[in-house]
Image (cartoon, helix red, strand yellow):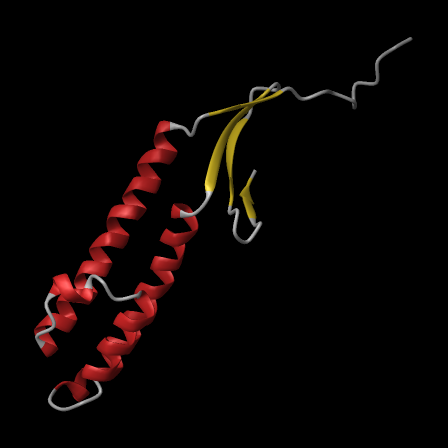
Length: 129
């Protein structure tokens, strides 16, 4: 009986996340925290809301407060720029959330290839390969 060369079994070993993946995830977390702080500082400078107070706001509430403050004089002339910046920041924070709330696995397969994938328990989404 000869073996069919097209049928290979792959041995998959799941191990912890690679150091490089951890560095990237950590960088995303730090950058996300920095963006949150910049948003709180933006509100503090325009409306005298202390960062320590706005740190307790939900992301949605903070966004609403910033939008409200920058829609009134004298800051209304900046409203379009602030809105565009906030939109971009919110997209970046969604990426941060995807990493922060996912379980990531690093694999070394029997054929020598390696990779990682992430599973988001709340949504059931899986990314990578």
